[in-house]
Image 1 (cartoon, rainbow, N blue to C red):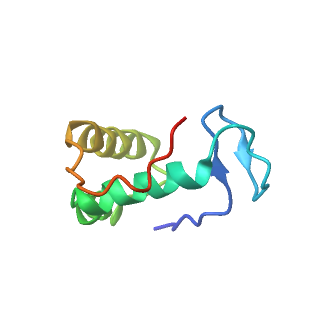
Image 2: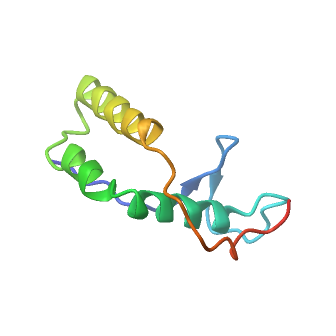
Length: 91
């Protein structure tokens, strides 16, 4: 099995961010933080890892199916309720 490593992050526009601090009006740090909080608070991390554990990333059909299952898992999960909204900033 080949293990992928993270070296750059994709931006919403499909380009790649290689650590630049100039993000225009989009705050990628907040988006990343919110995504990670959602995954953790919704209890999805273990479920997502179980899908990826035995995945052969060279098998494109298996990769597509795994991606579809994980995407559906995320989309079908309601946002956890949060009493603390102090991290939210007006647009």
